Picture: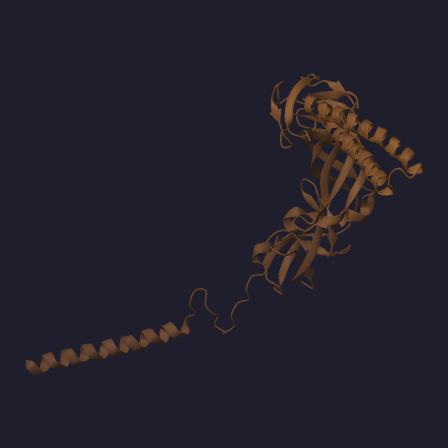
Length: 358
């Protein structure tokens, strides 16, 4: 009985070992799903599919758009040159005044009294000088005494001129024709050189300041028209460029431009925000590509072009944009094939397939 049981166990073990080897041989002969084929060749990776745009010349009306600010043609804060008390105010807030109009009078009684005293002293010195010159002719006085009196007459004259200049400073007059702003002082107030009593602005014409990218510096000329609109007004206004800053702003890489704008009706106001546009010469051979084809970077921008079926990254410079396209000013040529989709999956030198779209 024991021998029979032992034979059964041995037979079971032999069958288990045989089954294991048969399973291994079968597994090696069958290819795994997704693995190499029976012949040992690995299937080729499926190439990336992308859309491409063939660069062609486009007629482009180049328009530079920028934000600007309206400024007064002339503007000044009226401050006194001396410390004193206001005795008279001769203007109304918001009124138009002509150049030279007396606006504010500061107390001048002390200066007038000093002037009167100096004039009397000079007259006395002149009388004394006349007598001394008569005595000098008969040698009744020395030349030195005459010279001393002559210097006194000149000194009194200098003091008089100084006080007359101080007297002029007690009258605040309009330095140019314009519109008076709000009044910040009243009669009887003590004012000094730091006191802003009011402002004066010339509103016709106005100036408009804005900036354009430095690459357009040589394309913008004095005398060219500038069109703009202001917030809350649908009217399209026109100005004329009269000054261009010779220095490029290092922070924004732009050039500051100033234009003059007629404002006879007074509908435009200093400080208003303006959206400006400059029409440049038409470019019949501009290169425009879809905006999504441009890859932005921290230092430069790139696009991917098809080079013998492989991806080639090219650095480009951009210009004017519209709703869907962007101008390429450097880096591409007519006939280049620019990739517009699948950009994130492509690497330099990677093969791919593309469909041309327009």
